Amino acid sequence: MERDGRITTLNWIVNIAVTILFIYLAMRGIDDLTGTYKIDETIRNTKELRIALERYYQLTGDYPELTKPGVNLNLHLLDYTNSKGQKISFAEIYGRKTLAKTYGSNSIIASNEVYDIQDFEKGSKNGGWNYNYSQKTGEIHPNLSEDIYIEKINWNRQ
Image 1: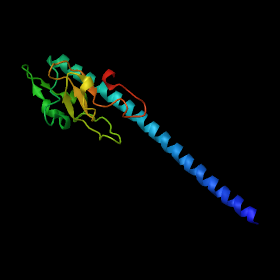
Image 2 (image 1 turned 60 degrees about the horizontal axis):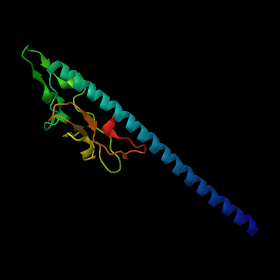
Image 3 (image 1 turned 90 degrees about the horizontal axis):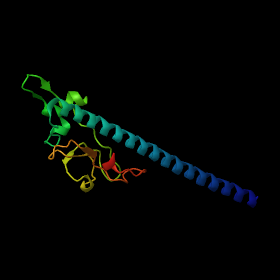
Image 4 (image 1 turned 45 degrees about the horizontal axis):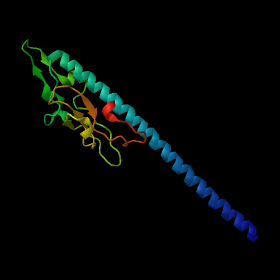
């Protein structure tokens, strides 16, 4: 009788351990999928933003001042009418009223702040976008560290 009690207790302990292991592995898998999604979306958002910047440049001969206060939350602040009377709207070119955010993690929050920077290696890595506005290059990168997600990505090369 005592032996049956030990076997039952052992089975119970093993079942709990297996359940905890299963939950741990499932959570890791969810984290991996979430990280992959965030990476894919950040790359997609970067491409969309670069395409809009280039289209705007082709229409105006200049890049928009994304670093101007409030513009990240209201792209219509960049609207203007050219000498021919045509309205040029970065928001319409981009297809959004606000800039896309870079995703957050445990260490940073999601952000669409834009920082004027010339050396992309020296970014703060605290989210948002690094944009070379002052030198009028139109170059833009996510302001993220390489190890923000499970896969390491050099965002300055993306």
